[in-house]
Image 1 (cartoon, helix red, strand yellow):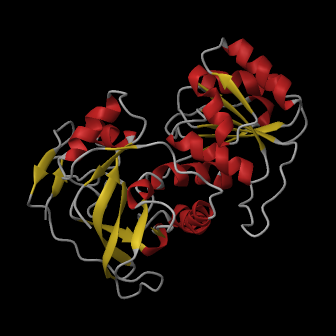
Image 2 (image 1 turned 135 degrees about the horizontal axis):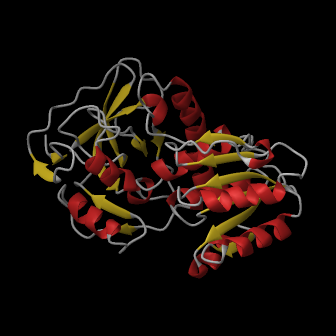
Amino acid sequence: MKGIKVDNVGGEYQFTEDLPKLVPGPNQLLVKSIYGAVNPVDEMMRDSGLLVTSWPWTPCCDAAGTVVQIGSDVTNFQVGDQVFGCQGVGFPGSGGAAEYCLFREDCAAKKPANISLAAAATVGVGSETAAVGLWSCLNIAVPDLQNLPAVSDEWVLIIGGTGNVGGYAVQLVKLSGYKVIATVSANAVEAAKALGADEAIDYKLPVEDQVAKIKEATNGGLHRIFDCTVFNIDVVRKVLEAIKDEPGQKYFASVNDWEDFGVLAGDTKFNPVSIGPVARPDAEQLNADVSKYLKVIPALLESRKLRVGEHTVLEGTGFDKFIEGVKLQTSGGAKKVVVKFQDE
């Protein structure tokens, strides 16, 4: 089948017509990939080979498309359903930049009627990472969709509050009943507040100034920090040092899942956020968590309580558009790039 491949670590993205034909297993969906979103992990995997189980490898872990075949044990989907999500990373059949890809039934979501298929392609990685970071790693309860909690005086600090992960994190924190303080660029302060942040701070301020503003705003109510950027451990350490004597268990989660941060002030519990193993057979707990969260996220989208992040859909159609999309996103020319692979 047609698609994009990379032959080896550091290799180039190439269009090919010789990708292996896919057949769904008992708990899988065979999905015709219509749209795919570019994620930083695509370039990281190409450059390093991390998470790639075999070569050649097909990129794009954020796909949206139409179910064309279901496995024998599938009960919640049928042929013709439009689905989205992070279908997996780095293993055969997971690459969305191909005519077809495979989703596990429990790691797929039906597209809400009120968002486009292109928009749906942007939701999976960002929203699932945010949900795991908050609900699995920061001891925050998944909200009851029929009775969303009132906002308490407890705060969550989101570092990188308008990025792909951070934008969803800000919204999901607020929907979970917490106040939000976010660090963002100076020109994104109003965007963060539009997503629901109660306070937004310029991350380019001196660290001491950021810490002072965070402590003043949260006034003893900060016990949870989520770094969605991987680059801000110095800020986290100084915030934790500033609040270490305030009562209550403190939690820190970060998408930096490869560093050992050692002992953190205030006996803070650290949990790394990693959805890299999602959809793999040995990631039982992660798959169970993602499956649970994928019942909440589409419902929040459909009820318009959760907003899709900003994105750019490239003009034209074709698998080679993914290569163009990678170049555009890595150049900083767009926040989130979506590619149309083929017609429905």
